[in-house]
Length: 211
Image (cartoon, rainbow, N blue to C red; front, side, top):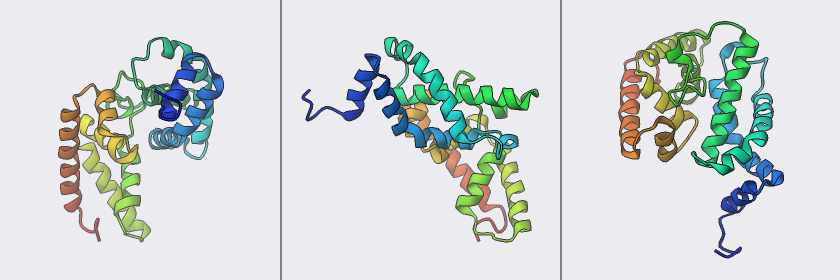
């Protein structure tokens, strides 16, 4: 492959494998917005306003720079998913350090992928959906709708809720979701379609949600 046709990301990855810290910093910057989106979605609501996503990313980058050589020697995940995993591990540390309390229901807090990331809880997903799908402007109406929406999300299977978080809010592609959850691409796609269909059906039963 010539320098004219080489994929820029592959060139950076090759430099990272050679221990090039500048290449690592550049790649991390390229992935920064996607990682920031994940942190914002999964940051515990009790820490919002106290902890900024950029703070988590800065801490995560220190771990990433220390572990880059280890990753390069045995890259078991695509590079972005490795960055996301390490960043998620750092976010989990931030939760434990600042909250200093027993984590809530494991089914709502721990990612299905090797327990590495905090899972987006129903309140976070409900807030995201309210911002995207509802036009209700009155505070009391919005609050009631959000409570109903959280009930809908809490009634969903953990895997379905996590797939919605990964695809719909983190905006990961189907292949990335399949890798994270240990599913085939076909299974991940089918599960996402079913989860989205069920969510839309349940939302349609909430009076005023789409008005």
